[in-house]
Structures are given as C-alpha cells and as structure tokens.
Length: 271
Image (cartoon, rainbow, N blue to C red; front, side):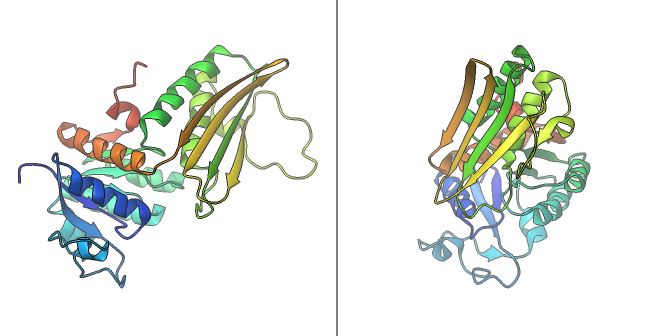
C-alpha cells in the first residue's frame, strides 16, 4: 500500500481500540502493527478478532522494534515509562511518533526531546481541535487581563484517570503563564487543604474532579472583584482524541525531525 503504515501501542486499552478503529476506517493510512505488553492475553491474536470483530491480518505483538520497522507512524497513548522506550525505537525506525501519554516528567521529556533529533515527534496533552483553540484563547485572555484577575484551571475526568492535574489542565496553565510572561513553576498552586491562607496574587490555581465516566471537562476561570470570565471545553466522545492523533500522524509524514504539538498540526501558531 502507498498509504502510511500505522502502529498503535497499548492496543487493548480504550484509546488503543478506538485508535485502531479509526485507522481501519481511514482511506489515508493502514494498520501495520498493534502492540501490547509481553504476556498479555491478546499477544499472538489477530487484533480484529481480539477486539471482537473480523480478522484484519494484523497480529498483536509485544515486539515493538519489529513492528516499528514496518511503520511510518506510531500512535502512543500509554504510560510515561513505555512512551520513553517507544520514543527511542520510533526514532530508530524514523517513524513519526504521536504521543498522547500524560503524566510525563522532566526526565521523560528530556529523553523524548533527544529522540526528536532523529524523527518527528508530535506530543500534546490533548489532541482535540477545541482544546487547542482553548489553549490559544487562554494565552490571549491571560495577556489581556492583569493580576487583578485570579486564574483557576478546573478539570474533571472519569474515576479511572491516574494522573492529576490532567495533561490538558497543565497545557492550559502553561498557556496562561505564557500569556502573563511568567513561569508556571513559579506561580502554580496545586495543593490546597486545610488552613492555607489567602490566595497569593498572581498564582495560577488548579482544581481536580474525578468521578463516573466524565470524558473530559476543562474550565479556565479569570475572576476579579465584580466580574468573572470563564473559558470552557467539554469532550463527550473520546473519538475526538483518536481523530486528532491520526491527523497528527499523517501531518508529520513530510516534516523534518523535531518536536511538534497540535498547534503546529492545526496551523494555529498565528492564531
């Protein structure tokens, strides 16, 4: 086939299965690999059958290196440790590595950045168009409003989510800090419990909700005496993330090695 070959990591997960369905339904690419950890019950099975459907001719494997060698892109929504390992292997294969994994630490990001010297890496805490527009709006509003406006990022997700604040909430915090010309590390307020004292002027606060099957809700609140501005995005279907990730994988095919994000993919740099 002339279309790019795509490998999906974490094939048995909710996002993995959604990504596989998106790739199989697309005329712009084709599935060449599905990765699961060694010892997983799906390893060795055809991915279509493992997902409860028809055979598609792609067996689930734990050998990422072999699968990546046949691929033009890897889409990866797994864990920080797995993503760092996959980044090195994708760079060896010169495959576009689309990373939707959240909870990455500074050491993880350093290793991913090193891999991006050899291949295209597209990394974003959220792959949806709406969220990335929200990031740009947050930056602009933060730049327009002074520190009389307190900034709070409020996020809600399902009860299975393991990291907090979400990657998207941190993206929004970074955007607000950039708009104000400060470092988020210097103004972030992420732990309120007990007698905390008054809110510090200029801080960017984070609040986290976990419950039920909430797909993803993010509010950025700019609150001043007498008035309040709220920017909001609500996701109701995880398919938006899968579609965005696939768009990123295809966008990266003719790009030079380096680290990109969805702002680049969606052409929002000048927005």
